[in-house]
Length: 125
Image (cartoon, rainbow, N blue to C red; front, side):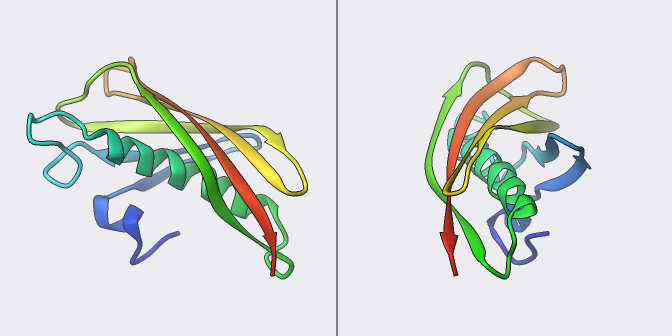
């Protein structure tokens, strides 16, 4: 999923798709760090939006609809300096015109790094 896209560029890898969730991981490296050597908050937002947007795309009829991010917020609660972070996305609301996703990003130590909520617009083709 997502070849030649932002997610592909920064190394997002899909790790699990379940009945009510998705997981993907992202490296903490030269592509995703800010100048102080910490995971860039924008990279966390990219991981969160990628997870929620793909989640929405998996549950709509592509012949009739497409999905675009409408609003995202992210609270960065802990830093990450190396390895990988893993995002876990689950739906809060799957309506006809909008979807709302809860995304939690964890470091390799399984401690919470970022909490994000994404609203996706479901648009007719």
